Image (tube, rainbow, N blue to C red; front, side, top):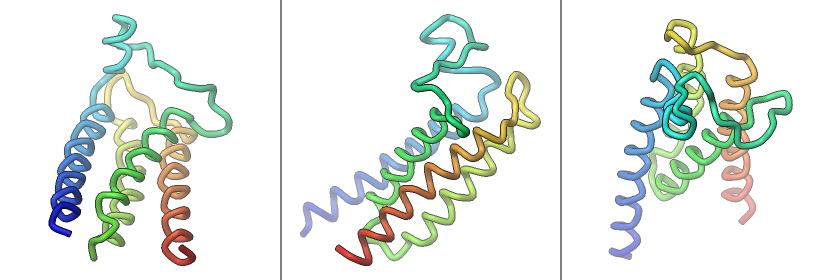
Length: 130
């Protein structure tokens, strides 16, 4: 039990560190990944093709939500976390309206929200029936 509590605390710390990284990537004027991978800060790497929503954004917020929900699964703050995930998925994309070399795109916003929504839905179903 003590080991699980320590593991949960480590996961929470990792979640918060990833949160800082995600916010930094979103607020950077250009593509950090493009800078490193292609030596072109205007080029955004694409993991898979988009289909109605941005796949990159879906993957990023899906993984971020998995980490957050797993880290806080035994906490009474899980509902606050889920609200936070939805809020940050919207606010970060909205900041692209004012950040140079970034553009607000509705498919990115929907990718963010759908990533959070799918993981939250799976968590709620698992919690209720398993």
